[in-house]
Image (cartoon, rainbow over all chains, first blue to last red; front, side, top):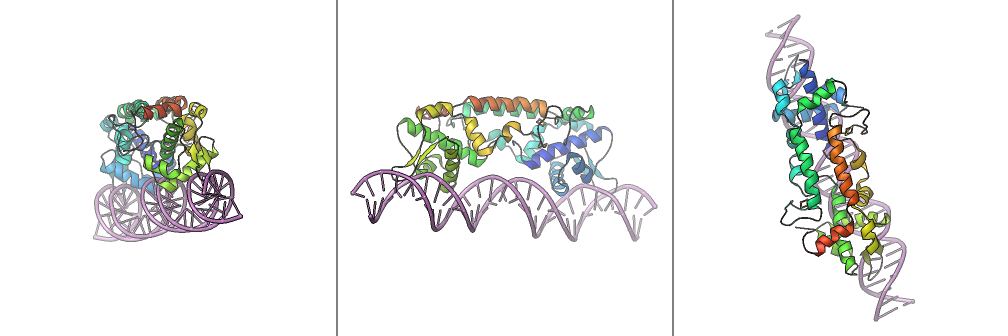
Length: 145
Length: 145
DNA sequence: TCAATAAAGGACATTTTTGTCCTATTTATA
DNA sequence: TATAAATAGGACAAAAATGTCCTTTATTGA
Ligand code: FES
Ligand code: FES
């Protein structure tokens, strides 16, 4: 509703990979798709994007799969995943669809919108994969239903 | 980026109609589309939806067009337009795309997401068409660029 | 009453997003 | 070195969102 489907899958996949990497497990696309309840081939495409953006790390061949380094779980923020998949229109676009959001020629919603957008931005920039994964680890949160 | 194109056009159209209604002017689809820079036939469809939801009032025939009663400008909130066009997934959906957002089985982003969503919700519920239109009237805001 | 005007609405077209399938490439291990 | 397992990537398919066109209906005013 705020992110594209691709982005939703991307975030869920990254969180699942992070969680498994904490246990030293490398995971395959099919396992990921199963665990986050997403279409497998589509998920594979998204993982390619995340790999190209150095958000996850992929290994080909037998025993291969996806993993995330422990340090990367701290440095990779949600904002990076969103930007890699959906671009930055969520940060820079006008809420009413004007060609650009610009305070010097604002749409009627500009002032109210700016606040909300900046809350969202702050949240995305400050939330790490590690933080999300550990919630899962403790069993407080879920990646599918 | 948060609303569909249809919803963006719908809000801009409603604000423009409100503004003109304040001057007692009834406006045609073609004028609206021109003034908010939107595709005319698509805008016509959206206006039909808004009319069916009693957000705007339409009059057929010569001298016809769209208008909004002065009282309605106060009672019609942005939330009603969004709901009429995009439904209420923006209020009720899970930010990570789980089948439903539910605090008893939350996704990893749930707590952080809830805050932002509730800010957005409050803003939409509390903002009236009148408020948006008067900003335009004073020339502080714009509906196209 | 008739012609012109404007919205309503159905059918269709285009574009974007989402999703699938198949082949190529890489790599571990027997 | 051969085989099998896994990701990479291109081509294609389906669905949803966006956008267009044309006919019908209502209404005004000459
Ligand atoms: S101009 Fe519309 S949100 Fe800034
Ligand atoms: S469960 Fe995901 S936002 Fe509530």
